[in-house]
Length: 204
Ligand SMILES: N[C@@H](CCC(=O)N[C@@H](CS)C(=O)NCC(=O)O)C(=O)O
Image 1 (cartoon, protein in one colour):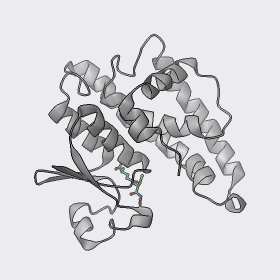
Image 2: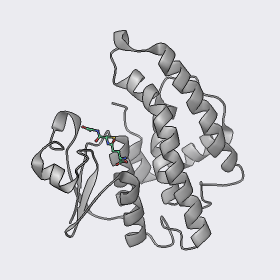
Image 3: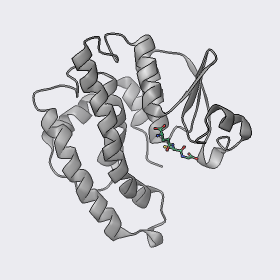
Image 4: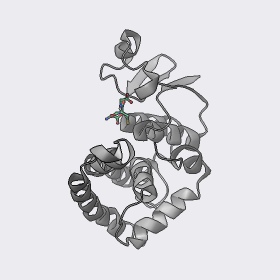
């Protein structure tokens, strides 16, 4: 059975787990990262020299980097669904996966500041600057989603990385600009059982 190492509250682990659930692939998850350790052991580093989570092992094949894992799983199990068959639709989905790292880079300050930093140590100016940057960035997928159900048309791997980050954005007590197409897309994601099970869990 496929093995995946990573704690359930990691946004990058969620991407791989959500893909697995959407695809109906059976897996064994091993807690790793933060309080669980494991990711700094020599055995783990031999699999994944970055010491980060997630990592998967699929019948002897080891892979790390969450978006590469999502692509691999989608290509293996999701032809015509998570993995669009048409080249340009797939390129569109892949573009949104890559762009999600742009949002992730700006959002990190907000998430870590508000969720993983004690109140007395928070740099509220930095958090506010990053929040404004995130709000600006999210106008881009909002515009792309006008007249579309999902980022590449139908639900695909293209929705997975950004969907995981936008869940955190939507669930934080933040000032958010009205982005109606993005909100409608997020509500659509919330209608998916795999999203509710893996992604839309309490922030920690
Ligand atoms: N680019 C990598 C980043 C992985 C990453 O930063 N993982 C974080 C969790 S989201 C991590 O391993 N942090 C250390 C820890 O959990 O101990 C990916 O997308 O897989």
